[in-house]
Length: 354
Image 1 (cartoon, one colour):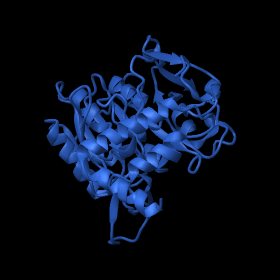
Image 2 (tube, helix red, strand yellow):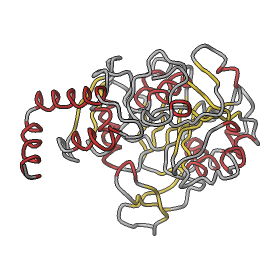
Image 3 (cartoon, one colour):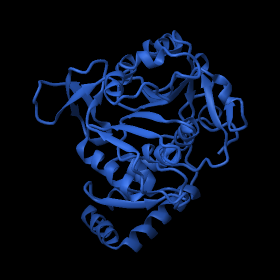
């Protein structure tokens, strides 16, 4: 059979929603039925087949077990793995443990800043948690189409406490940037003022001062290498004492952070530890994966297994590490923060196994 025939068959499946859903379920069953150590079956086999069923501009609608509803464009691994979730109504859209810890850290929060809010996969969950107490999420997303999806998702879920912003978080409020790359893979680069697709930077401190906000409870950053600059732009808040300084979740990636001398010696971790923060790597799947009921595993920054190809993961910084002394959390050492189904279970699976 020619490749054209195979593509025609996939196109016919894609035309009917019930067929498409049934095909996705069979591919998930295939993932469970085979044993292929060292092979990332999702990325190499089943995922590309699901990708063939959708267009980049196609809007998908999906509801979580909590009733939260998302609409999103099929443009990334985030969208693909959300479509392939198991169970069909999961408790998160993306990164199970990141989603859980953000909701935990947001409890009681009044002011939250998110850099890289995307379509709201985490922002909606946080906003829902803090809405009843009058909390506000300041959600920065320079990608116009994804920011529109964020606004749409706020409306779908009846949330009036999200403030979508087009600026990019940075170390100053006077630089013009542009996004280079596609969708969730795009990085920000300095651009000439007025350049097509350009946007303005702002510091967290300048933005909140203009908004009349003098206390910040939580910072969330996933901005493809601009995390350090964004934190430098929030120093007046980071310098606050325990009980007043914000908790922080941020991404690091080997492409942007040189951890060859260990995570504690990186500039971004030193910036935090010098101000009294305890910093941990968060163990998580860079996917949609059911970890309901499992403890959130944290690795102290000086005990993270970092070997492997260039990769990234989320980190958490708090000034009161006692908040993690509950059964909801487990402190582990000498393992990788990257949870991967196809890699060495001793390093890349949750402590309780898959």
